[in-house]
Image (tube, rainbow over all chains, first blue to last red; front, side, top):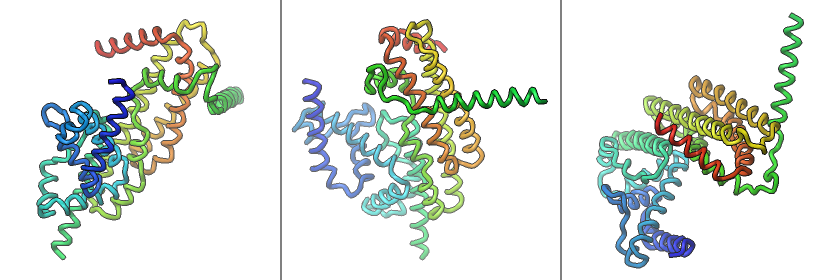
Length: 148
Length: 193
């Protein structure tokens, strides 16, 4: 496939992914977690049945990887307050008690899996530090709400 | 005593002239060279420079104000410690990137008939001004944390940009095969080291 045609097809696949799938997730943090979940832990390759059916496996993989990186970059560069709000929204809508989720996330740090593979070390450090801080603030708020 | 004062004054005046010279606005294109060509060369030579946007986020006062208003002292301390480490790491990566570019530049222009001594002096002045700001910043971050040092960051960035722009402009005029040979040579040395 010609380089330009391939690029345009990937862009179309990304638009499709954003409008049909990602739009259903409340907030950018939820979208990031979803996109990371489409990546195989062992191979690092992305897969999405619907997208692969429509655009082919290679294009779907490239579109998912690109959207994942975009979502990550956006969150890593956003103010800490915004990230904390996004995390709060994710926790409240996750379907499990918020206190349990926050405690588990602090202990196991599953958010590390949300980092795209080719991210610069410093961006990874910044993201992880911001999540740790946001979780600590959220935990304190939840404890205060429980006590009050 | 008077003699020492005289030499000191001459030295300072010379330094002032060099700083003024190095600070003059850079031409966006030189000798018909396009900006994209210069950028292409810089990307090929120095891929290790950290993102400026990430740097701005690390030094963002807004984040610190949020933590101060929302978090308990232990969380604040940890946040500050982590941001300080990241700020120093970001600064070190810029210094390392420019040092590598300087090394590459010196190897590339050595023996070149296109060598322009005026440009080379400006490059050297820019590089040393950057090192001066870098050392000040390092000390400031280490002593007072990243959020007070953020004002000086733009100066370090400006000197780094000027240096990279000047060097990129010179390198863009050289034979790409010559540049590739030096790049391969430096790469193989770093692998051996």
